[in-house]
Length: 387
Image (cartoon, rainbow, N blue to C red; front, side, top):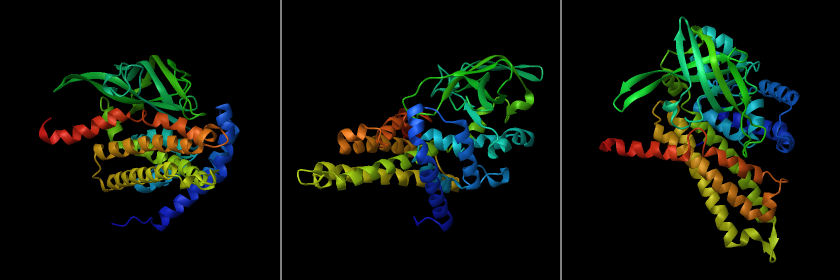
């Protein structure tokens, strides 16, 4: 069992970290103060990311991306996770892998421009009454000749305000299942500006300043059959095939933020003097550091193991659920303890700790809540017994 990074992996880690520290860190303060990303700044940083080979790194080489394997991609995501989410997500964009599932015509129209940095995509699944229960979605798609008519609402849709098109999952029918009737889902490409498709401002979020979410409204929105992604009524099939590793992506970015918070905590514990000695000599602080380091190591190993298994083709849903659960809850713990070690200074915006602490809260909710991850894990444990 070899835990050493390859030369290529170390180069990607070093290149990504240098880009984050030199190009993105300097703009964190402005984004945190204003909650906005300047479009000119986005364009500038986007081009720098493209020049550095960091843009669309998750997309296979055959489609114009860097083609990182899952394990290396997670190492890359960890480094990006060190900085403000809106900065790294927008300026070092990773288009949704589900775009690779499109036809050659769809790839040329939607995937290729995203890889080149000419367009952005957004993924629309969540609804006001269907968050974790995606089968419970109410937004519908019905066939009308060779077209489809879309109606309904999606919300919490990340980056929809800047996206040029949305990948929308809609209820397109029903079928019988052992547990009764269930929804059939179809995925569609819907271009911004299509009649009947409106993007409205979403909700203000305490986590990730500069990040935006939107509400999508569909009112008799007509899209042609060639805009179906994958096969009609098989939207979940294409999602399960191409979106499986997004939970690991969330976990990987949490690792980067935890490391950044931890480094501040260790330095403060070593340098801060109280009662004639550094506070790191007090057991109340030193044990916190030990616990933080242990939790970080455990989370990192779980994320990287799941990524490795994903590349081997034998990862399970429980593997990814455990990794996501551990990493997101670890970040909450580390961020909170880092602030506690700093005392009042930890809550001041001169340091990134209060931001990391705020940002950590959403990670236990999106891409599947901690409760959903525990459900996936326990179901896998009980299934062999028929329970």
